[in-house]
Length: 398
Image (cartoon, rainbow, N blue to C red; front, side):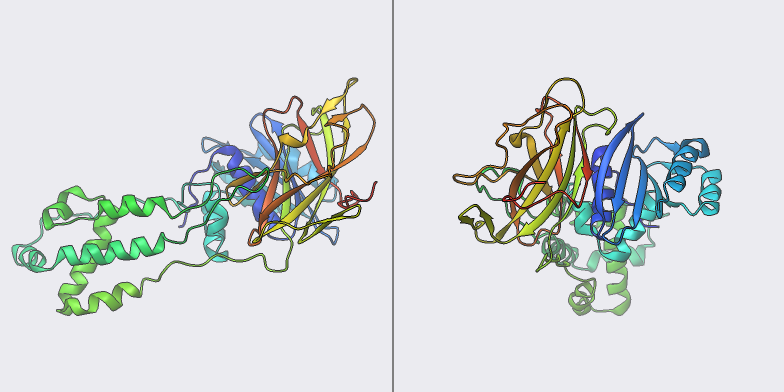
């Protein structure tokens, strides 16, 4: 079974939110205490989804953990109810889920979903390049091969096999990306697969190395190749056979479609200092008053509008500089516009006053998903609530 790699808890939540945004859901993710998160989703046709996330690998989800959540979701008329964890589900939970039309996702189910739907690039935003957990497969015999077989293996050009495999690994890890610095943008750019280089260095260079020094997973591949070559009696088949393993798979492009946007809250709506209802749009040009703005070449604008209010008795803060947009593992700060700003209030919001502000980010044209985040430097906690009625027109008000 294909198992998803372990992700940091908050990255696991954002990964799940990404899965829904790629299925045309607008999503909000909020912490709910005790290490749990709630991801709310809504589609343009009114379909509602609710996902309870218990993101740690140490978790064993029992029926009592989800009964109240499922009852709440059914009472609200939620169409799609999901529970996800990086840990395990008790057997009783699986029976309960079947009886109450609840979808369960652990790392095994998520790994199969990623493999079946080709979502590896979505996972790589949150890892160092690994997507699936590698099973350490022991060979079952300590490589004390019969002398004739060992002599035959020793006569084969292991160095050539090593270089051929290394070439494949290098080729698969060469699908790189770049990072830029436009206006307020900041973040780590994507590069080649750094794991490729380390795996290349671990390939055996001799029979003795193959028998003792290589990791089991590498030994399995190399020995299988050598034995097949030996059986076929010719190393001439090596090239075509390895080419048949397949090359690197290319990523998708956003094309004329907008970026699917989600938002990750720093607190739940009932405990946050500021509640911000939000909406987003993607555009290739932006007009503010009489001025038209164009993004840098190879990029486009994501405009996010907010109706924000402080929940306490004193003003709340949500500064424009604290907002970032994360896409494909890169975080972008807001894009400054000459002679225009969407935060005339300086990021202060009065209690009970639903003030409208907007900001804009520039992202690569091939970006398909992204998440609005608030940096920890912001003074107050913020809860995001998606609302299609919030204006994304810099020239309009709500």
